[in-house]
Length: 226
Image (cartoon, rainbow, N blue to C red):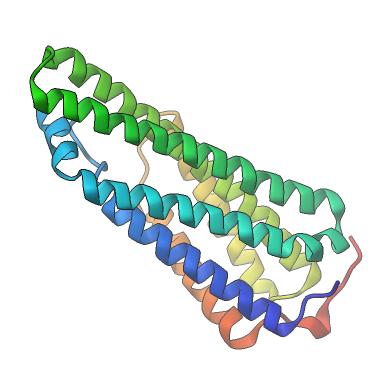
């Protein structure tokens, strides 16, 4: 099954929906730059629980859309290279599972914050538990970024080899996702990185989506050799 121009436009819409939903969820998460060593952290979680629940739902939906993108592309990529298709879909599925697990950590923080707010038990152990859950969430978050970068590199390798998008756009995608992977890996090993390592991918993704919505796939240039 060969990709069509409209298939490219639909892919652009799927990426746009995933980015908007995921970005909205991230903005409502409320965990970044928190001081987890004080009770104020748990108090803030308890007070912002409703907003955070929305963030979790949006995060799961965005990740599910990423799986949908992989399923949508599976037949196209499989016609080019079977192993590449299975690898791309497999990474999307594994990423979804890890996203779900990371959000379990966040949900667990709700219970801890409620116990802390009730004052029934000693607050200090709860602060320590909240700190552990917070760091567990972000450890998984950095792993997700690495998987996102790997999956993106596989996709843009496919787009580069098949010439479904211009070479400069595919190469930009490879570089942008490679930087995301590097940033996630550095943070996983507790090496601070600039926020711009990840902002650059947002700039690329917006450019990629606009290109697809306007131009679709370059089907006349499709190649099926590896």
